[in-house]
Length: 133
Image (cartoon, rainbow, N blue to C red; front, side, top):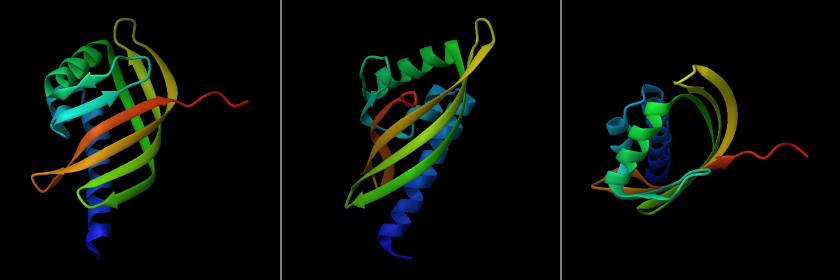
């Protein structure tokens, strides 16, 4: 297996860990997958920068909603100590206050960085898939 292929597999596994951590609603488990200077740009949300803001973002979010995401990875490209991945997901969102659920589809863009020899999420952006025309 080539070095590049091994990196792609590690990144795909990291994305799966991220999805698993979201399902568990544990901010520390999610934030541990990001670099300390990570940036998250979510749909209809302010930009979140660094571990402290990431922890607050996920802690607040997990207090309001439960996520059940399923992700499909469209591509992974590795260049040295950086990589990116494009994906799309289907997410069941349950609002905890009234236990009401809805589904949404999202598109994601991950930028990864090797941090101490380990791949981590350095930048992450997601938005909702627009309705079909």
